[in-house]
Image (cartoon, rainbow, N blue to C red):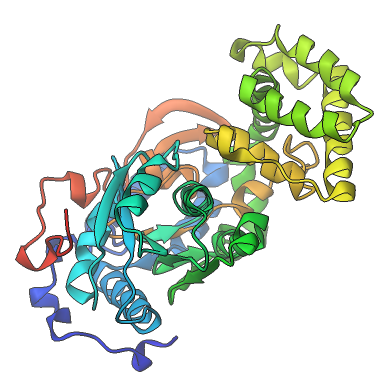
Length: 423
């Protein structure tokens, strides 16, 4: 959808826009930020200067004015999609920005939600949604508001728990899960659309809808190829083995989880899974590993081979028997991540990820006035200004951008941005 095709309300003028003081606070061309960038570059070994300048010169800067307009575009697309008579509920997550974003959306919503539910973001469970949906038996629609999504994982797991799991528990059919998000990375969009392939959604005839949005560019597409190698050397030279070791340790940890073992054994025993003895042996071995063992895990070739072989067999079993894990008893994102990866035939141990430039392929140079850069989604320099050398932190930092989000910076919504729906 193009801006010229969208309807903007009269309060869109910059003067009446809430939080107008945010405008330009992360503008790379402003004298203060430009000075920070140059100081940051000079704090590095000269061999990295040219690559760092190339990175900063290719930032995709989203001003507050442009973001606020795109937020209205997303809301207007939602207004056109939802029938006048259809009720919905939404969620505000403790400690996250989506509650603030929802407040900004309220003046432009043609219909307020019948309930705004506060939940915990990182480890979502279906209970808050089930409880609220029981109070509103007519509701078959949950909506998630957010400003941007890079990986899509938080929205994905919240939709699983607060949407799919909740509607399944209530056996409520023909439901909808909507995402009102003005900026999405391509990976995030694909992940959210994949929700529609979930067997539980198909069983109850559920559907997914995503608002009008702009795609967040990948850093690997924003940085000239000749500088990618040098930047990966600077930031991620030693990260790949650590990343793989972390994934391997995580897999061993979930093998200790009683819910995971119960679910796994139930499915595999029912179908007389031939590798059950290997699983027993691996679970016994996993008992001796602790987080402090992470550095030596990546060199334990025998253990890695056993983990990979077991995962391969589980994948073959799932695909050949069209089996599905019931994740209702598994409440942590980590466990569900591994089950989902195995079901999709992907490598949850990340051991096949050999090229270090994947680290920039999964990141972005997109920068917003209103957001604090996430070090997992952007270049580490954007987050804290930490100085690296050959893949190692030096212990020094030259902060560049604002480190406090506006919703935590003492700024309060004006009258037009208060929650208009039920509290």
